[in-house]
Structures are given as structure tokens and as C-alpha cells.
Length: 194
Image (tube, rainbow, N blue to C red; front, top):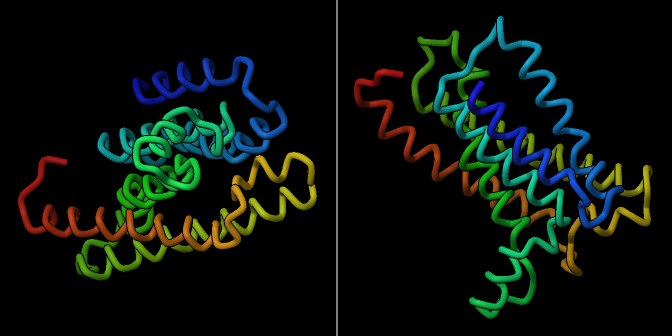
């Protein structure tokens, strides 16, 4: 409940006067669905506290990106200026965070009832799941931008002139998942209280 309330407060603040209302709506369509499924299935399937915290952090980053449009988030402008980058990389940070933060929830969702499966297999398939969902998101993003509102599509896609934007985003998500997998692999060999 604390995670849900924390996310909702940030989301509600970000819903006030977003930079581009149509882009905000497009960014939040999947959010509405994901939060609805999470709340609706809570009594039948519960993630660990750690997984809920990680999902909340990711959803907060996503809420911020939706408020400004990903290519205009001030933290990304700061990174661009501080490191002499060619674009606002906040979207790249969020794609990396997708893999880093959502590997654990994907692992729990897919392998909670598979105690005999080895830890290598669990981490392999969880990382593959991150790659799959990242790919599906990029394809869905492209379809929504092309069909729903091509004018808002440019802000929604946030490519900032990079023709390889989708491939870089997916690669960063998988890189985040690899890092989370390495951390999880180290934890799997130790006793845990989770």
C-alpha cells in the first residue's frame, strides 16, 4: 500500500499541467493497465516487498517522463549539459532502469512456482523476458504513434532524431537486466529472508 500510495502521489502531481496532454495520455495508457492489473490481482498474487519497491521506482521515473515528455525532462537536460551529450538521455536512463528494476518482478512472476529450476535458467529467462517486453513496448510505441496521433507521435517516440533509438533503448533494458541478474545471482547463493 505504501508503494501504491507513493506512486499515486507522484503520478497525480505529474498529471497536473503536463507539457503535452496527448503525449501524457499516450504514456499513461499502459500505466493505467499495469496498475489496474497489479491492484486487481493483489489478493491472488503478491510480489516480494523488494519487487514492489523496484516497480514503484520504475513507475515514478515513468510518471516524470510522461509529465515532461521524455525528451524534455530537466534532469536529462542537466545530464546533456554536464556531460556534453548530443541529446537528452532521460529516456535511456528509464529504459536501463526498466531492465535493472523489473528483472526481479519478472522473475517472481514467471518462476515463483518453479523451485526445481536452476538459478541460471531463472536468470536467463528473466533477462530474456526483459528483452521481450522491451521489444514489445518499442513495437507498440511505434504502432500507437503511427495510428492514434501521428502529430503527438514524435513526442511520444522521443527519438530526438536518432534512427537507432529503439535498438539503443532495447539494448539498455537488456544491459540493466544483465546487471540485475549478476546481483541476483550473487544473492541466490546466500540465505535470504525474502
